[in-house]
Picture (cartoon, rainbow, N blue to C red):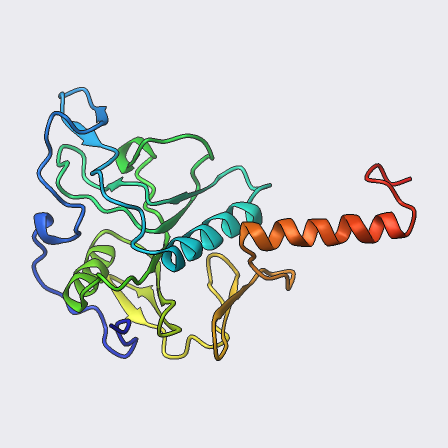
Length: 237
């Protein structure tokens, strides 16, 4: 199943909170989560897998960890993967868990969920979704509508099987499709997307690419071996 085509904008319409996302399920008292002062439970888990396959999971990790590294020295950028986001106080059925989300203006640190009213009402500005075989066109259309309705500025959808990348950027109250994703640079993240014949590459502002944890470990090993061959220790002498 291919990703939604960027030429097809998120069409407006009524959104039923309980049908937005596969994780929008009735809340039971057995679910883990936090209660606010009114005793409403905001679960941090629905018991479902973070990903359907290793390829999807690897991409979620690569993007999430790559963004963590990119903004490591910026204290007010919060990056999360598969974290429930509740935009409306008092309604625990309006929720979704982006594969990756970025909130500028919020401090780093542990969260069991992202309750927007507890975050100075800061909306996560950028979200990523990695398409899996189980996702349906209807589900992805509803997801795009959800992000449009609740204020996301940039939404990116990558299909690692079809090697297709779609993007939407906010214009007023709407998310409009990015006409050409090849070479596109995210206005918020300042990262560049390049689609090759067999994969997607994400470039940081300094030109370095996003790497998987394994790729980072191997690069560190090669650097260590190079330094040793030059007679340089890890301490620089």
